[in-house]
Length: 90
Image (tube, rainbow, N blue to C red; front, top):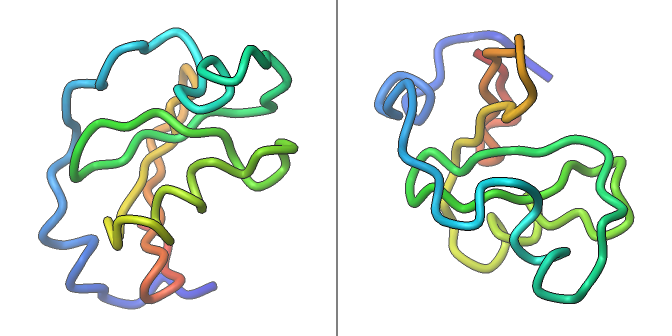
């Protein structure tokens, strides 16, 4: 993990509107599951996915399917962002 300048982090917006539903991992909810650990917000399209500590790992899966590079924590009180492409935190 690096904290060096990342063009994707620099270009990503600080926030986007969450794509409904915003009360949990969209993919887990669609499958009838509520077993996520933490939530992540895609800063390209607003998709809410679960973290890699969750069984579904849907935030990473969303990146793999779409190529959307930057997520931010969707947990209250957290404001960090992560670039999948450059494995950078900002």
